[in-house]
Length: 103
Image 1 (cartoon, one colour):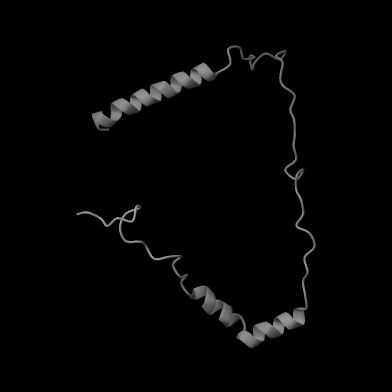
Image 2: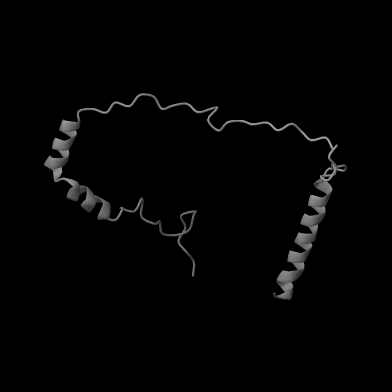
């Protein structure tokens, strides 16, 4: 590693280590002590706040099949999927302020 990069990287690592060491609680229970107090485990279900999307109206399947047949069947969907997406917008000339680039 290049010395110009190594010195700031080492300094940043040292600051990070000292900051994380200071952030540790002063007294932690000994994990090997069977009598150490342990916080109560709490469980929150991932589904507790779930809200369903509501009823879905399916519609007439026969009419849907007729529509697919009328537009060309699955091959039409395949052709549409194979077409490249159009770009969202053309790139602007110049810089972010709208000024032309200076060379």
